[in-house]
Length: 320
Ligand SMILES: Nc1ncnc2c1ncn2[C@@H]1O[C@H](COP(=O)(O)OP(=O)(O)O)[C@@H](O)[C@H]1O
Ligand SMILES: Cc1ncc(C[n+]2csc(CCOP(=O)(O)OP(=O)(O)O)c2C)c(N)n1
Ligand SMILES: [Mg+2]
Ligand SMILES: [Mg+2]
Ligand SMILES: [Mg+2]
Image (cartoon, rainbow, N blue to C red; front, top):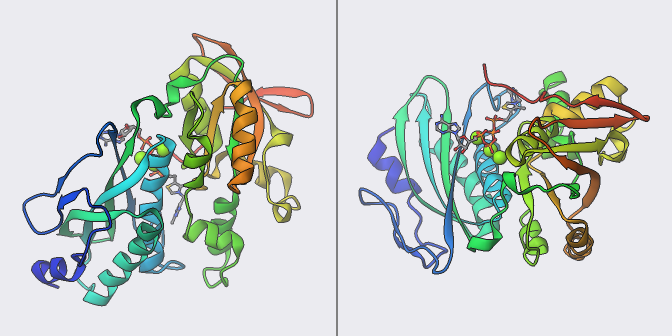
């Protein structure tokens, strides 16, 4: 497949955002940042057999999923997703239709957020590699940062935990499994855009998205904010159909499987009431799971289960 043909094939015929001055086709893209806003920039890559497998995913699922991971980080910063660049390393036996499917999957999700593809790069590779860099905009006082947790805050989470991990488990068990709710949560996660709207009026939110697992994300918040956090295992939101799973397996899924692309964060008790109401109005499932107990120079996350307290260590996915 020739690179020039490929670029022609994937160049959009129009841009959704008028702030794209020059898109694909020159040495670089030109954008006019929204006035009064700051730009947020994120990058996340996915590699064949590390983040996905062709045993159970097709190229459009993969396109959707890698853009979702980036959108999830943009939302976790409090920013509105705007544009993205994609770099692909493609095995030599791929044809035009394969690449089109990958871009179709991305574009389906991009449509939801009104995002534009504004550039990228193409190289050859032994396994499929996709790296996205994405941009979002945020008002300076609405950034949702990891170091913004304060003693006394409510700790909350959106959606349910462990669903993507359970979907992956079902697929590993039988790659030919028919799509069901959990499998779709793994293959085609949809980041919580409506949370941005629900939380817009709040002054301060500390926020992180759940890619590696809540045990990792909460420890990141505790360390960045220099606070101790306490969460109740029984309060963690779990889908009814998963409650029948073996309890050790369920605990691993809920605390450390990750890839749910839900949000975990903290806000003041006063603002929590408002956030809960606004989220309900906009159909964002949200639940209080604990609290920020104190400031600390030695930050810890405690897990309370059946009145027993243990330290919740980072047990998320680590790339070796
Ligand atoms: N290889 C790298 N080179 C430079 N910066 C990196 C690299 N990997 C991660 N980062 C930066 O480290 C921070 C945390 O990254 P990461 O743990 O991947 O975040 P997330 O889990 O939210 O995707 C981010 O600021 C990211 O841009
Ligand atoms: C084939 C396959 N094996 C294992 C996993 C599980 N897995 C891979 S990466 C990952 C964690 C998230 O990925 P990472 O690159 O750390 O995302 P980031 O935190 O940077 O957003 C998990 C749970 C998977 N999704 N697919
Ligand atoms: Mg990352
Ligand atoms: Mg993140
Ligand atoms: Mg990420």
